[in-house]
Length: 222
Image (cartoon, rainbow, N blue to C red; front, top):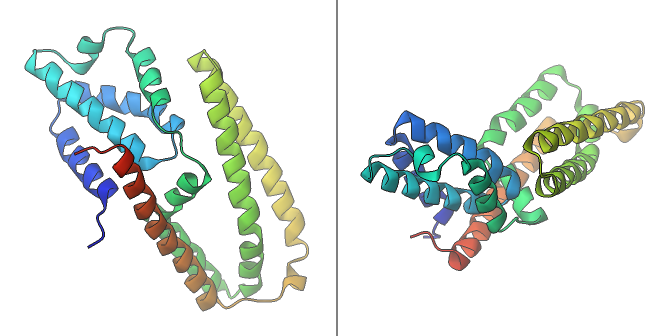
């Protein structure tokens, strides 16, 4: 059977994380905010989470919390850990759409459109999807560039939010302009749209398993 290294690592991390004390769980949660901004490869993110859990368990043996073991400058340590992992590329970013978290959203869109009978809007959605994906990737690239280059935590968080808001407003403006021509796009069956959507979803899951297994061979966690 095709191994799922990312799934096995994530399951083990969740179990060990839940066994930690509240203070250590909070410290790791704060650390992951930096690490998740540094890489689109979810396997790499989980691998660093494992390292933090290892550190917390070692600190417990010494009678300390993770925060006490790392000291007051621990946020800098978290940033350094984040910069040492593989940042990932467009394929890694695309793999995230294979997450189960996206399935209810996709199913809800299909059900909503089917109930309203506005099948021409589905055609518009299909045509706009590549634009939304590329825009989202562009925003993610800008946010990462800001995260890596800005030395001040407060400054980089403000700039990342500003970039996201400006680009989202521009995309919504383009979408509303495109909706004015929806009648000329033809119609699409909700069943066909659901089939395409599920194909993309499960295709992303297969791609992510292959991709993360490749990363696991370079950086094994076991």
